[in-house]
Image 1: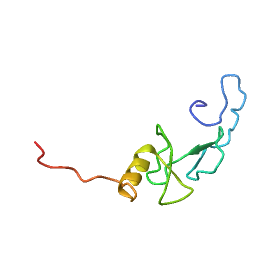
Image 2: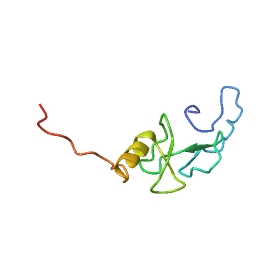
Image 3: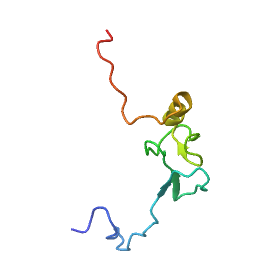
Image 4: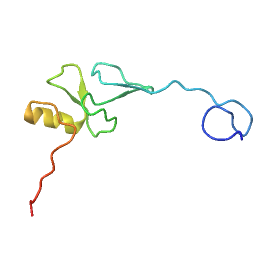
Length: 88
């Protein structure tokens, strides 16, 4: 069986090129390119509408949710919020 993921080769028998891995950074000053992408310093997400600079950890980037929470509450956004009970 020669198919599947990984570098076995394609239909032409040529080996699949090995591309450098994508690197994720939490540093606000790092230049971004095809291989370097941002990651939230707090929750580690790589997908957000807006990147924000952290006030509590200078030089680090936060996703939109963590950045807004930090700005509003002056502390990092928790991993999980407590669930509200009996609101109805």
